Image (cartoon, rainbow, N blue to C red; front, side):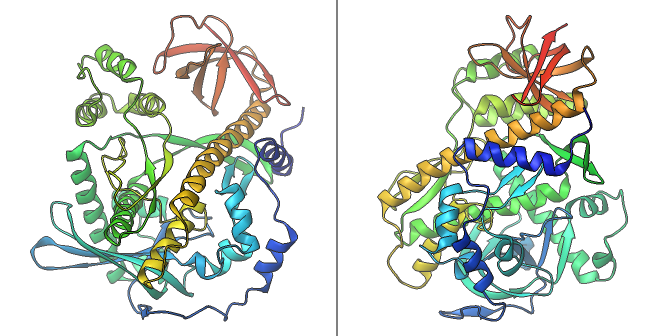
Length: 486
């Protein structure tokens, strides 16, 4: 069978989306709304600050077009830093109840497959008019935080502003430069001020991260499979690993999401929270740690788990990614929940935070767009645009659709891997157990990076166990990759 083309994978992805209750195509009314939006018809209502002169910049993947966030920072006396994060004002282009909003409320998320991205909003909006492109004036909701030298957010405020991205940077080149492993990106080499901004951001991110780790945030290093195409033909699925620049942005977004949640609570507004309960399989985490010479407490304890992870990262850097994968699988998936202003905080076990609301990616996640509307209404002194019951329904549907999108991404990845592996039946691979459903187990191999089912010799295995497996067969149509234990 010939190698698979990107267009064939896209057809598979669209088919999988429909099966999982997601719509891969935009209705005509949505496309008409997007095309009718003019570049110069940006609403200017309300109290909007002019911050176009500030040194805003973005860091994302090289090929990303739907830019959701910008930031800039200023050093203050005593080691304190003022950090401002601007989030694209998507609501200004996608009014509540409009065709684009209705479609986004159905899918609730962009779907990232091996064939490409199926965006939540049409590209005319997400990749253009609601994207914080370099050199373009855009409306944004700004979260400004004062962060002391210990990583504590001492104060925060939210407001609307007009911003301009002064430099679009990419994760890999920024990370290499920060690590001293590569030259400065062109924009950084040309601007001492931008270089200073990056170093200041990096220091703030590390302080924020250390503050969370002192509270028990988990130190993990996981990777995602990234397809590699040559002339439209899939040639590999390689690991897309975290790096210093990705961690920097993640740390800033966690702080921003926390500030957004606290803002709504302090204003007496309802909100949507991202929650992750204490792991139900703590006993298995105890066994993993015990096998490596560490005793975890009898009940879930995030700081103790993080101390174990930090020790293993130092002891066995090469094997830490596999351990991280096992821990992440055992922690389970997060979920969305509606919260009234007087509700007890629903925490996030992995991040060690109590107040957490997704707010920084309104082009890509519907929950973030809803949160943006709640924030804008509060800033304007207007009633909340959603009731608590409506938020609860959005939370439940978004959690479901997120799981369905993950299923689509996993099945398309398997179809891609099945094409790559079809000539390797009988080959042996190192693998790590990633799941233990009632019938059989699932493992991940690293080259190509993909999960498959073990159909023979899996008795007594559990998440985190390492083993060697032989490729027994692939079924592209059924999205199966089957192994047997060696």
